[in-house]
Length: 148
Length: 181
Image (cartoon, rainbow over all chains, first blue to last red; front, top):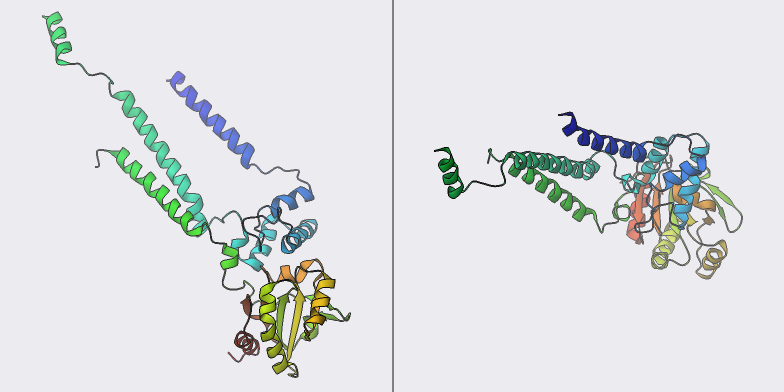
């Protein structure tokens, strides 16, 4: 049983470490790095498909300057996001929020992955249980002959 | 069907993927920010802007307290701004002597020189000022120009017009700012 579980435990460990590295907020970010990361979260209001970090449009420049000021004045990331949403609405966010339509956008792929994983696990169990070769009538006749 | 849980799971995956596809299909191609029909600031206190006119006069929202204020974001090179100019001129002529009214143009995304030249060449008579650092444009949550905001005498945002406004649009904005609608 231990030998069978070992690969699964390894897989869980690899996934957990990867998620931790990707999602864990890095603690020692400079103000400039924080401002840069935040400006990547906002849509440039007047250009299609660009973040405020990547656009040279005046409003994008003003957004970057405003974020820098807010970071320097000690505002939290959540406060800065809220300030932008208060002016432009939630559509200023390039990443959907966790509620409303955002819940669907985040939730459906997770649900599809979970269901797909469950299906795969069930299928693997079934394939393991079911013999892949079936005895033919000739095989059974041979067995009967040997027994008699 | 109950004896085949795999089918249910496959159905669930299919529904989730189809749902996601529908959501994405409805969203992709729309610039949600541009398509947003109304300002987030409606009913909220208007940002206290400071603009400096080409004559060197400083205009702040605070200095216009007690008036119904129409703020128009404009620049010299934008075609819709040019299209809007006759309506703004007619509207301004009708109300320029109203003591409870102010129209302020704020230059958005333009150089001071080009804006000043255009104001002179096109006989724009209402106060027009520059917006250093795009502060006012940001605080109003503008997405382009022209954009027009109506502010009540006590400083609340009462209405917005995205894109060129007609005289009727401007009259409606002013009436809303005055509390007549």
